[in-house]
Length: 147
Image (cartoon, helix red, strand yellow):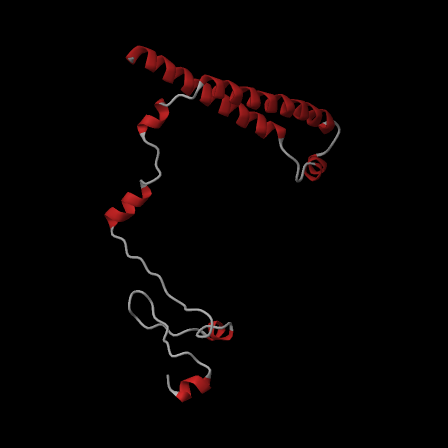
C-alpha cells in the first residue's frame, strides 16, 4: 500500500455486488462505517419459472400426509388436552354471557378489549378435535381394509 492510502484513512477496496456491477455506497452507509468496518454486497437472484414452481412446491403437503395416523396414546393425550381447554373456555364463556346482561354494545366492546375470546377458542377446539378424530378414524379404517 502506498503512503497516501495509509494517511487518508480509507481502505483500498471498492464496493461491488456479486453480479459484477459496481455499486457506490450511500452517504448514510459511509457515515455508519462502510469502507472501514464492513463490506456492502448486493445479492441478486434470478429465477426462471420452473425454479419458482419448484420452490413453491417445496413445503407443500403430499396426498400421503392425510393417511398418516398418530400413535393411539399420543392421539388420546392430545384429545384430553383439547377437551380440558374446551371445558375451561366453556366456563369462561358462560361467565361472559352472564356479564353481558344489561350492558350496551359499546360497554361490551370496551370491556372485552384485550381479553381472550372464549367463544372463538371453543369453536377452534371443536374444529381441531373433529378434524383430528375424523382423520384418525378414516386412516385406521383404510389401513384395516388395505392391510
